[in-house]
Amino acid sequence: MIKFQPRINSGADRFNGLKTPLQRKHPNPLKTDFIRTAIRNQIQTHDCELQQSVQRHSFGIGVYHFSRQDLEKVKLEGKSLTIIAIGMLHLSDDFSPELAVETIEKIRVSGVFRAPDAVISALADRIE
Image 1: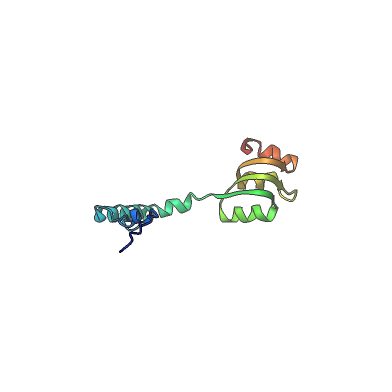
Image 2 (image 1 turned 135 degrees about the vertical axis):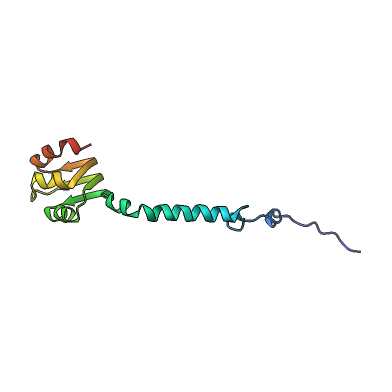
């Protein structure tokens, strides 16, 4: 006599016929290729404008220190800084307020901000 052994279903059998998102095919592959190509072409067309409008952003958590050498390097590159800091931001005493105005576009600090009084007054409209 043959004994019947019930089959234990782990639930995995339900998913044998399903495909993962990577295995599924778009109903119209030519359309997706067209869209990807159009996006790439737009990026290449506007690459020059994108490169010209790049700003140097500095964001971080911790203690950040900017010296005269850092700001002179930014000035030589023809860029401006947007500094967003959580923690402490220290601007050293070795640069002029004019250099700070030329190179720093915006400062946002959640925490401690230390800088010379002349630099703080020169950047007053740029400190959030």
